[in-house]
Length: 341
Length: 237
Image: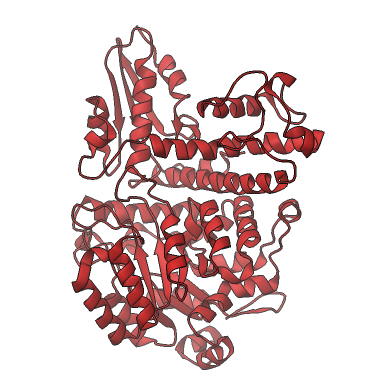
């Protein structure tokens, strides 16, 4: 829970968090090394200097650090754990559902545990996915269409096998589909960041919600056209959020576009932890106003009510969390006590 | 004999196809060295993972640009610090097409992708010019303006105007004096009633492209320890 200087309260659901192991011991090859290095550049490039971690800590952090950053210092009420398998790059995977489940088991009210699937795993994967849903009570998945698998450089939501997985999600009530795009694709001569397959899937599976991570960046405008057409398409704000620090003007421009095309009910805050620390993102976001010239040209405002929706209420709705009841439940858990102390 | 300055000059005209900006301006050119008539250029990109298709386009465009210099000998464009750096470098050096460079991962050349970006670049470059024309003359006249009618609308500087005309030509649009100044990216005339909406859409494309450019330059700066400079200089206008 975040209370602003003005006295407004914000129930915070962090829509995309990780507990990864990108350490050299877990790296399988140069791609594993390149992946975490790239993440570190995202982190160091956009974070305020005082929030930049040493590289070693960033490669592998312990769960206590994560709990402290998110729930004690970072105002987060609930974090949604999104796995990123990358088993071609990392010996034990980068951030699997099984690893995330450790956190979920320790603090079940503080986390939503999502899983993942990959259509290239075929029928065997489909059965395994069903098993995971039963074991962990999964309500959402994160799909990474650019993941390498052997000789393959990616997949599309329109692949017939992917449609079978989506149908399975609909059948099992796994209704939140987080989609992450780029930077590779099959075939490589197509636009790796193309979001058109989401349009297709959202039309064919109206009972599912499609949360497009990093609001389709770098194809944000194409994402907006799709979201205008498809009411079950949402935007995850990971990666855009940190822009608020080094490039507030561009943050305002993109936020204004998103509010204009999607409105305030379909945008989800996320820190992408440990890419960025939720504390400064939330503090800056609550204080942020869209500059007058942009606000009047586009015709949108970032009101307190809109910020409350973006920071938590929208995600709470997708995951059937009652914000008031849940906040009451968390009020004297171990982290709330640490905050109070 | 050629000079390093000549190489830098022609590289300034090579663009990142997606961001529609010069690779020199984006700071993607790490080094240029000239020995006798031979030129070697090192290109660096914002991440280890930048799409192979974009990387290939920049490397092959750089090769074409430098090779066109009068009296140039061997041209070598080296893509550094990239997940397919060696493959792209060798593919372009030996004159292989994209499909030949990635036989297992590509099923066609890059013309379609290039065109996709050119259509967006056209809208992005057109938007401020069209907006100024609408504000100065009204929608009804703006959509009827012809190339032969004169120069840039009030409030638009010469460079913005020239860049717009260049994007127009790159889509092979009619360049004659009777051709409409403003059309859709597909070359169709614009209608007065729909003009505000058309500009609204183009604005979104522009915002997306600019945010993307800032993001890429920030990642590049983080990668090569040049953040201090980036934090104080926005690339896009």
